[in-house]
Image (cartoon, rainbow, N blue to C red):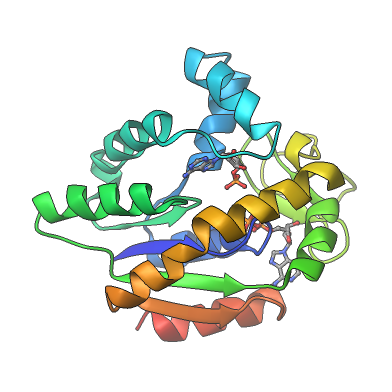
Length: 213
Ligand code: ADP
Ligand code: AMP
């Protein structure tokens, strides 16, 4: 089962991808997490990606594509995967379709988690992320058991640099311009589904499970 999660930054793609990954036993592949790990490890890719991420811009396709193609070739992807944050541009989607076609396969489900821009700003300001294991929390909607400590690995939670209010608006603009057209792209491929992402996360997950029959 190959799934692409679509939706604005902060719509809940990562939250849902993690739940799908646990239930269906397929890996969640988040390009944002991969870039952040590269930044932490001070790699050359991380240094290049950081300058774009801090401004709320997309990392150029040429830095993103090979990374994903290499990741999808790893053994744990043989039964499928959930792409979270990729593709984000039409050229990325076309490159993915092309790479999959050469393996005689395709994306089975593209799922758009729909959340209006007004709610997004609230979501992002309360998001806290675990730099240790990638788990995501919200100070109000999904708080950790102990204040600011990851339930899963005990690491201290952080607020992402690009979740500051001034960067969030830029990221939303970039989403509408570059990423939203992918909804039409996957509709034309006949695998586009939408869920109402404003509902509580367990309800959104239930809706997604009905789609992934
Ligand atoms: P994305 O991966 O799309 O950027 P996240 O999954 O990180 O988004 O979610 C953004 C923030 O919103 C996080 O703080 C998360 O805990 C919270 N969140 C996710 N889904 C919901 C929901 N259905 N209702 C309320 N808050 C949510
Ligand atoms: P995310 O964790 O998905 O919110 O991504 C955080 C940031 O990483 C984005 O704002 C982009 O700068 C960068 N990024 C993540 N995935 C991609 C991608 N597929 N293409 C380009 N940039 C990306």
